[in-house]
Amino acid sequence: MAFGGFERGRAPSQPMAEINVTPLVDVMLVLLVIFIITAPLLASAIKLELPKADAPPATGQVEAIQLAIDADGQLHWNNEAIGEDDFAERLAHAAKRSPQPELHLRADKATRYERLAQVMAAAQKSGLTRIGFVTEPVEAAAGK
Image (cartoon, rainbow, N blue to C red):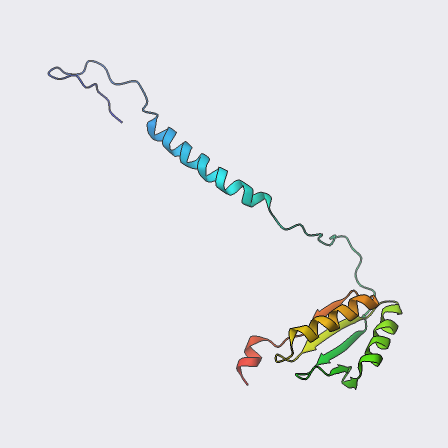
């Protein structure tokens, strides 16, 4: 900040009392542009329904059904090979139970996604709402 004037040939008589606002305006305009660009990104957040913190604890273990799909697309219900008709019947029976069991889905990495999607659609149509995917940790897979 300058303390004198721009007069030539004579000494400045008083300090310059005006503030140079040009850098301040430049910085404010840059910040305004940044906020205009980032404001829409803040408004497009994913809406989630989070669970309430004051929910009572679970009252026991929920039964889990282990459903495995091998590389050929064959279904295994709790380590027992089953056919398509038996699968639909077991899904309907499981969906009617109270409390509803969880479906733990294990699929071979060579299984076609189409087969996996068919199994998930069948589970959803039967009324099962709690489906989970079982995978191996990266460390265990790397050790093989």
